[in-house]
Length: 154
Image 1: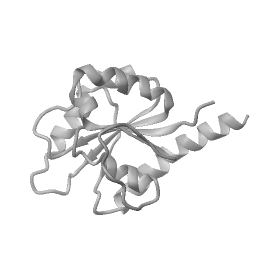
Image 2 (image 1 turned 180 degrees about the vertical axis):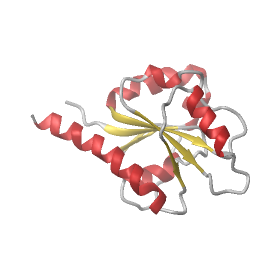
Image 3 (image 1 turned 90 degrees about the vertical axis):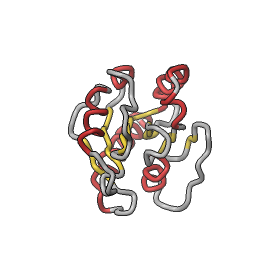
């Protein structure tokens, strides 16, 4: 059985790699323009979401995911996800709003982006400069990972 991971999806510069670093336990993680399978996370490139031709690769990669964190940056001025995109996946989806602490942030726009993508609330607001804001999300995401690990042992 393949090892399941937390899949992180979002546009470029939305905070995917920062969240992946936090979930992996810290340390510097380089940005790489392709999918990166780490011990806990599956970090997807922003262009895969930004190009409709690449959506199929995100959907196919979800077979290696125990759950998905769909990120919406509060600084983004347009919708990132296609309508109902979350319904293409068969694992739990968590909506994550990033960069809400910045002066140009529009948290309501990020919420709307996740809603129109088909991600159900609650939405988790995180800030890469404040690890405390990510602890609750980490606990939830890693609990799904532990459930998958238990399944593979049985």
